[in-house]
Image (cartoon, rainbow, N blue to C red; front, side, top):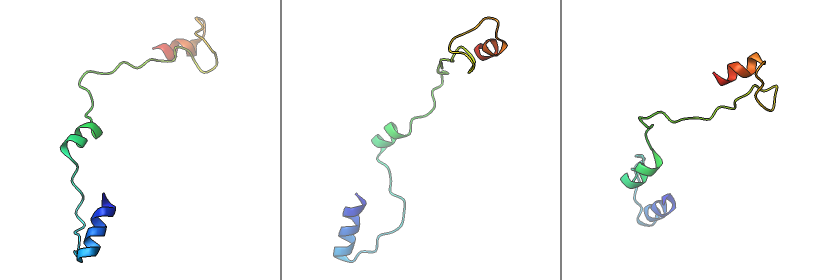
Length: 66
């Protein structure tokens, strides 16, 4: 898009302003989505980094779950 704009400006000797280009409202809707009002659930690992699975007697595993 910028290439075409610069090409036209060079052909017709137009000084293009350095204003930021406006984003299409439809594109802005898809590119800049707001944070959701409802919190999103994230899965926790369920164990500490010292094990490959949860251990009941490990304090670090218990802390990782909470």
